[in-house]
Length: 111
Figure 1 (tube, rainbow, N blue to C red):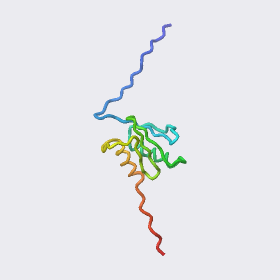
Figure 2: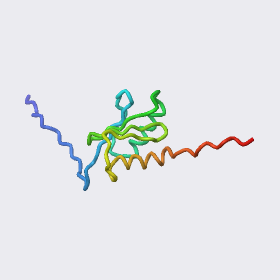
Figure 3: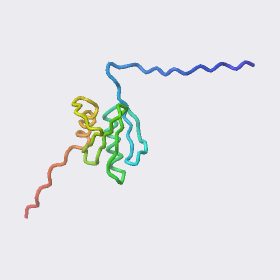
Figure 4: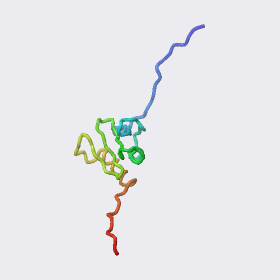
């Protein structure tokens, strides 16, 4: 009986016109939750983690080496800071704006 020779598997992923950034959503204590290339899904997942984690925030680690902290109210903090006005952080911040719109300011109670 001859044993078939094993060949390496080939994973074909069609290329796109732009560079695809991978987003890894992690808890504040660095437990991985999800990996995606969709900024909207990363934003929604990060908000869900922030809602359920005692620290009230989550992080999105991008494959370009930057981290975006997402707080429960939709605030973000990018590390390292960048002036990139058209990159992935803005895509996620726009998605967060739709998912966690700013709350109206509290009105003073009228007696």
